[in-house]
Image (tube, rainbow, N blue to C red; front, side, top):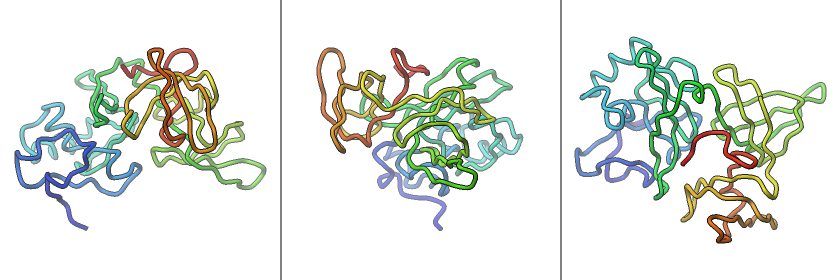
Length: 227
């Protein structure tokens, strides 16, 4: 597998200067789809300016001071995606991956208390032994539990232990975040679901979208800081 890709060919969701250099780090296959995540090295160097070169980034990571969802990461090609939490305890800094108004991945600083919470959308489930279910989450995580939840619902997790704190069902009246499409990054209230189509209300306007673009983030208010 190639270790780099041309900047001009990088996903539209990446907030990068496509004319700065010819190549950019290619993220390793991982928890998130290629277009839904950024290489850890690019975040540290270009977004957070914690290093000026990729060589400095690698040295920083080798010191094991960078955590993603509470776990130490040392690979500059590790993919960090939507709603992942990046922490640097020595600097007392915490960040979450969100989307900007144009649907591009962005790094948003959060508080230490909020860094212990992660939202994970259920994208599939499998029945296993003893009547338990294994839930497949949007970040590549698999959780086995007897918790009552459906595909499309969201788990509110504590990290790094990934303990389920709450289930946010995909239903009318819930707060939803749009992850794709021309309305990506919208935050509204779910009004209706019809088959694979859905509608939500935002600032008094009703908008139609695809059901798969919806990510439940709370009941009356979002469980995490989004806007």
